[in-house]
Image 1 (cartoon, rainbow, N blue to C red):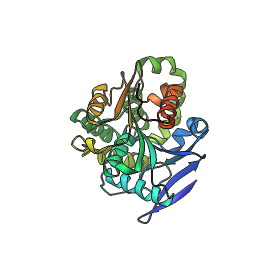
Image 2 (image 1 turned 30 degrees about the horizontal axis):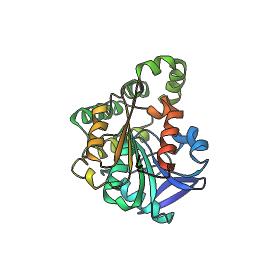
Image 3 (image 1 turned 60 degrees about the vertical axis):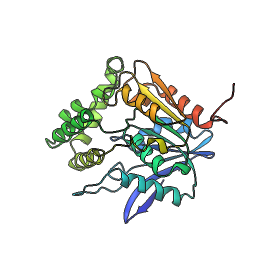
Image 4 (image 1 turned 120 degrees about the horizontal axis):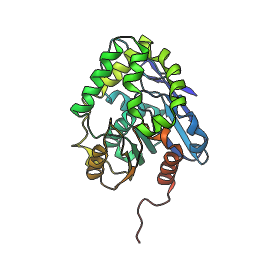
Length: 273
């Protein structure tokens, strides 16, 4: 565990394990702690790099400021320079997938392989409206209401019902966090930072072998988004998970690690059969 100095701001990151490096990028509500259940598997034969974006987790917050996701790309560039890594495989989910795309577009030679879970090529009007709704509810400073508006929709209905007892415990854990003005203001800034995201005209610049993973019950980033990514990113493959929602790594953790490690650690990216 360490802190990166980024333009006078402290960015929290963690490096564990040895082997081919994997940089994993958080979804918008996540932090480095969110990946704890996966650390053992992901560090068995790889070096795992986790970081909290600005306004996330243990990284500094930027109150009373506006920024775009380009600041997160700059943070990754600074981190890789700090770690003396010229090339890395990147795994991103949702917001982290968008940042991964922007990094890969800007730095194609620095990306060994790219894995995108539940990611969109642009912020659609539909997604922007959802973000605006979350921001409006956040201003109420009511943790229970914020939970009900944001959390159930990220899971598939079948998973939510099957894990209802766990979800209720999760609700009690998250409500105090969702009542914290510091968290809610940071969430609003993070949400706003993705408003202008649109990489559709630049996706052809990505050169790394890319695995795109969609979930057919993802209502935030519908499957059409991942199909569009697959069409626009050359040398990409699309995998569709049936009966799974937006939080695919939690609903199918074994499948998540299998896809990530299998794709990144495969000796060859292309095969002649």
